[in-house]
Length: 152
Image 1: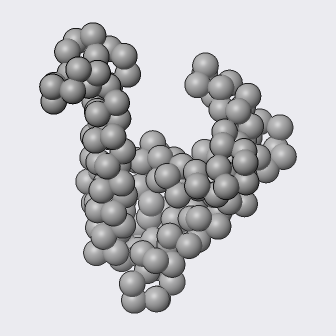
Image 2 (image 1 turned 180 degrees about the vertical axis):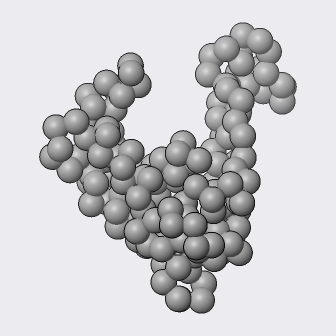
């Protein structure tokens, strides 16, 4: 779930970072804004919380984005274009990925276990992950901080 949220935040904030001319830098304020925007889009009945069905819809949307990214990644790995990955092609970067189950996502997001997800609960995991990456606490995850995190 953590990886799904981080990936979702990355999918949603990558364009704004690239538009600012800093493709490898992620700004906490951009992540928070993206999370708030996506929470608002997911909150179909505008009650300020995400119900199980709204989490289902959000999970489906994120899974579609993940699937599109995986399809693109597969095509880039399939060097001979035969629709199959040889062991050598696979070793160059393909990994097994699991799609999220909405009930599990709801359970992990719903911090107070009331059956719905508040805006704070929706953002908490991804922003906590951002804060762990932002080791100098300047509100921006630099390429160096990202690189340091991958070595941990």
